[in-house]
Image 1 (cartoon, rainbow, N blue to C red):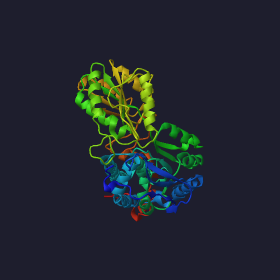
Image 2 (tube, rainbow, N blue to C red; image 1 turned 180 degrees about the horizontal axis):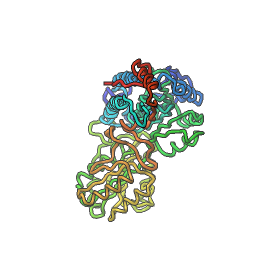
Image 3 (tube, rainbow, N blue to C red; image 1 turned 90 degrees about the vertical axis):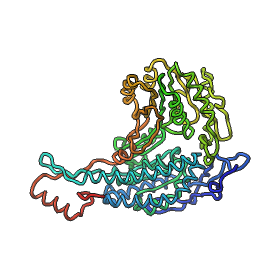
Image 4 (cartoon, rainbow, N blue to C red; image 1 turned 180 degrees about the vertical axis):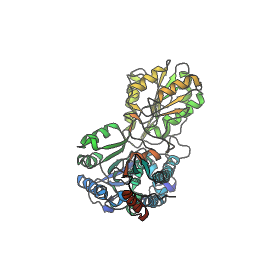
Length: 525
């Protein structure tokens, strides 16, 4: 197999602990094996990586109690803490996190099959995200370090926490996207119950001690097990103020339905998408093809930001298909640590058979596989299939395939893809390829009202993390970026004081004595 010594599984990680109320508790009950679809033997078989606890309803509610107690109806240590205190806690956490880089990168490769460069990038990007969040939070505090006066009323306006957050992250970016929920929720003074995703679950283990010793008791609680078993009873209590989830809309709707006071539930959701590329007849084909390869094939298409359908003008579609298919077939498949690998084993055992179903359905309804290797199976993979011509009767046109298959649709009138996008349940991003400003301008003007990010001659993507990340319709609720996430997980709140000598003297005394953690005009440098 030629696994480098550094990346061999030499010992199993049997995760026995979970974090509740600031205590790493030992679990002696049912566990679930964590298997990798990557084989470590000559004859193929999945590799055992370790195991995780399968907690039950009692532990889920215990974690919720801990988070509620830590928030303490707004009276808790964490929500009332000075901004400097929460920043110091986060800096302590990220300093410890950085020492776990090699361990987490290795687990990213084995658990979800992410290439070595992409695994390293995910870790480094997450660390950068935390530091950027700290800096943005400092700037937010600087901007609020003042009193305003309007109509005879002084106001000291700041942002405060929302309460208790249930945080559920995705498997495809189990570190980066999970932390894009967790980190802003915490730093804004909320308390959290967090359940890692089914895949990428072990890589949280190296960080448990850092969570334990960086934050006050009960501020962050980490539980393991089945989502339905743990999240459902938590939601039924009605004690969750925020549902923070990156996943699919069915899960989000099901969890929301369990909350008895839906009007009180804030939702911050990153959901599915069906992002199209639109390749106009004047597009630079080399550029368009390279970007569509990156957009459709990166991490085997297992990204909500992946290009899921390619609309190509009928005058260039044949040439596009020929060259695009050749590029797809040239992509190297292998294990994540192999140099130059672009396609890696799929973490979900049943994903190849699902992709095959989509291919078979498309073939029955008139499509062809355009690339020679398309649909070739191995024990843990199905080679990306380029399908053409694709129509609306095919499942692959409507379903977010989240895997290695790319449908191509030809068009003659630009209104065809626009009408499809308007009718779609999704509205995250689009990539548009062309060069004529007179053609592009009205197209862009429409597209910005159908999706939230228009990529000009470039693939859809999330980053940089400072830019807004959101979607319309079933694709998202709330906005996740460094700047926006701090606002998504908080609410504007303020002290108001009528301008009178009596009030002004008290207000001045509060500022001078610095006895309030909320009322402050100090600058954090």
